Amino acid sequence: MSSGPVAIISDLHSNLEALTAVFREIDQRGIQDVYCLGDIIGYGPDPGPVIEMVRQRCSLVLRGNHDEALFRGADDFNPIARLALETNREMIRPGFLRPAIRKVWWVFLRDLKVSEQRGEMLFVHGSPRDPIREYVMKGDVMFSPRKMEEIFELIPQFAFGGHTHQPGVFIEGVGHKSPEELGFRYEFSKEKGFINVGSVGQPRDNNPLSCFLVLHSDSVEWVRVAYDVAAVQDKIRRNKAIDDLCADRLALGR
Ligand SMILES: [Fe+2]
Image (cartoon, rainbow, N blue to C red):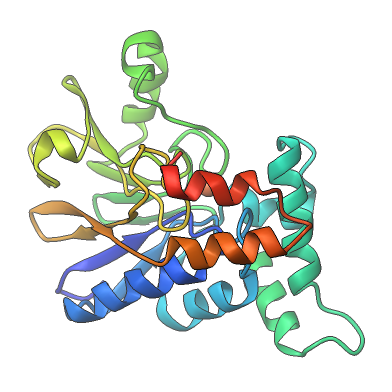
């Protein structure tokens, strides 16, 4: 890890316009180091260019449930997510007479690691208990206290995840705080924290702006970035193998 701030992105979901806008912001801030917590593909229309950008720019890349579904199937996905995943697979699947770069993308996704611990910090896509698939929701604080206890037991001091597409922080013994409640910055305290970095390519906190996190030495900061939502919607609607709902939701942030 470099000594400067680190940008952490997650849940890109084949949204090239959003990822491009996020990297523009990261570059403007002079941030060198970028980590990606998975779900590079699925839902959106541009899996190839999004994988390539992640491959070129990110120093740590973890596996999300959509990346994994490429190899183990999407049977547990809802029909809309499954259809988009199958469409994404066709767009990047290597084969005879297909572009050679696809083989590179395929192997890159196949070999992604599941989690990473660096000092006091743990990085996952889903949760420390189930790094790829488990959702940690705001409601778990009240309704699943045992689940939250088990999760905090596995966190050295801080953990970072995505998966729910809802940015915020779970603070041990305190509860959940949204970026808005914190003024978009969480100053580290002695309590353990599980920090959700939000989603670049399909935010679901009723805010359509793309979301990522900047990790500083003593705090984290959530950043929201505008991008050309209409351009992505247009690509999705022209692609008959991706349901229009995947376009509609981008404008709503749901
Ligand atoms: Fe996701």
